[in-house]
Image 1 (cartoon, rainbow, N blue to C red):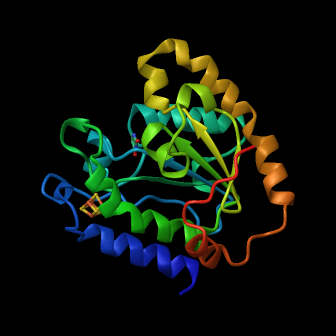
Image 2 (image 1 turned 180 degrees about the vertical axis):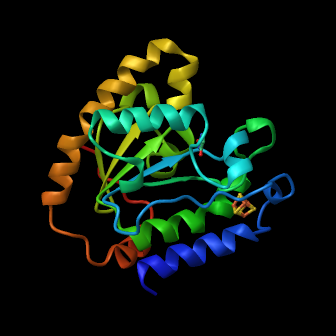
Length: 208
Ligand code: URA
Ligand code: SF4
């Protein structure tokens, strides 16, 4: 299936998904949005109040901050793909549970395969843990990791920086380094067969 159709198919499946308990409390599922040709993908935690109302990712206060951060590096949100590790809102914005994360995981995997982004920016602990299971965000934020042929850059969640002002300079600094990382990742040869590679080496990480 071509990437645009695959993203539509994922969004359609997510909208009626009952694979985990989160479907009970959702108003709208939030599959994510952005162009299938995006070179960079941002992955947050899960929909909050406003996202659940609108069915779109990062449309509340954290989203506004994310857009401001993107603007500082001359990117518009319409140029990047934005999604979450769980597509339905956890009640009261609680953390997603392990069985919810694993139930939802194949949708994100299909989005990554369809888009084949050169750079993935994880926002917060839960999306970081998907790629870097045994690290602490305070140790690795802003660093880049070559994982299964892509550059993964873990960052603090923008909402964390809004709640804890001391994190804001780190978030801004991490963002300011992104253009350089994107340029480097775009120069590297394209991964043609990431799907096959990821199936063969599901756990392999190379960190540098
Ligand atoms: N926080 C997230 O992690 N995701 C959203 O979509 C909005 C806020
Ligand atoms: Fe399905 Fe994911 Fe929503 Fe759970 S969070 S119901 S797995 S789309």
